[in-house]
Amino acid sequence: MARTLAQFSITPDSDGDYTLHLEDDDGETLEFTASFEQLDLIVEAIEEVIEDEGEDALADEDDDDAEPEDD
Image 1 (cartoon, rainbow, N blue to C red):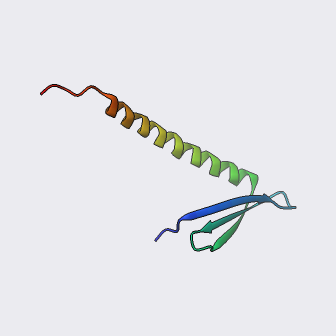
Image 2 (image 1 turned 45 degrees about the horizontal axis):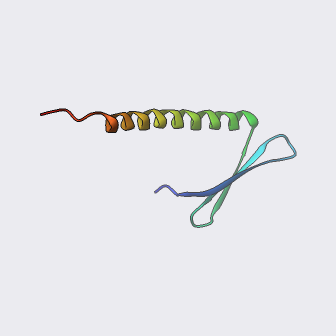
Image 3 (image 1 turned 90 degrees about the vertical axis):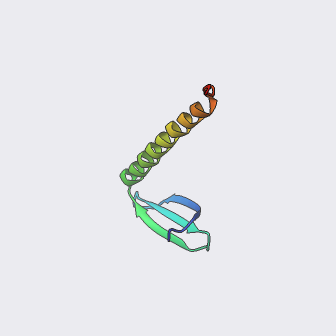
C-alpha cells in the first residue's frame, strides 16, 4: 500500500547535489540524493501531471456549465 506524503524538503549539499527528505504520515523519513538534472526531471514530470489534471478539471467544469438539453 502506498504511503501518504506528509511533508518534504530539498537541501543542497557540499558536492553540488541535493538531498530530498520525504516524510510519511507515520513520521518515517526517506532520504534520496539527486542531481540538479534529476530534480529538473522531477519538476517536468510534476508539471505534466498538473497540466493533464488541469485540462481534465477544466473539461469537467465545462460539462457542469453546459445548458441542460430538453428531452
